[in-house]
Image (cartoon, rainbow, N blue to C red; front, side, top):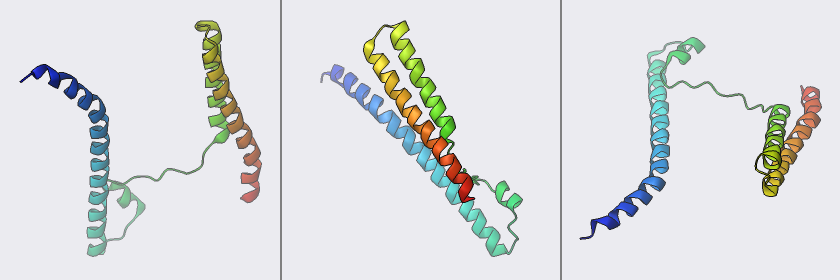
Length: 128
């Protein structure tokens, strides 16, 4: 049998299979932590213990929920600055027209997010 044919096969499987394997491991451990948290919580409820916020935080697997608010002004400013950086690198650094175009596209996206954030900032204050 020609063993040299196995080298590229293992290379391809390793390159494309390893990221999938890593993602599966992350999902597995997240699921296990959730199950452990819920099992512990269920035992505490069955024992009749009062569930204080400090007690919940001390249970393994407890996760603080992230605030869903996005700061569009900050995101837009950062994206626009990255776009300017890419465009300047394309113009001054490597003198590549395509890179300048990509930088201006990213800058335009950042500018749009920034304008959207400024426009909706007033709406968020009015809704409160």
